[in-house]
Image (cartoon, rainbow, N blue to C red):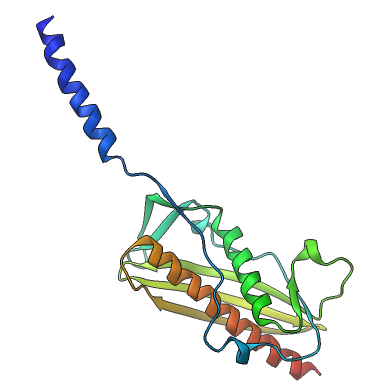
Length: 198
């Protein structure tokens, strides 16, 4: 009986320490952003409908945890810092918002929004990498294809943004900036591609 009375406070103390050391989970979202020269980047042409095909995403990003890249071979997953929704969905939503901010006077749509409209350009996108390195560099590596009247152009680029503070919110902000840089270049290449076809 004495042993039970002695162990009870110890067990309660251990339980309290375990509960107090448990960190709450934080959830994050990418955000659409405007760049400094957004007006100069806009597609100044006749109204154009652009179809963004479903984006191909790497399987290593098909998880809720935020990822830090140790090196080319090793990844760290944070259990306490997670995406609020599947990253593939977030990326598509934010990229579409970024593109439509820049695509004037046209607009980008997905398949569900076509409504019998014949898009002038079809865009296929594959994300190769979207994470933050251990030295706090947000990296987006992506390739894309533009298709207009059976004329096809292929592109590939990597965007890197330095993380200002070594916390997860700053890392997500830097990743959001890489998506906005991609949107800038995507709209520019669509403008050049469309002019070449006229």
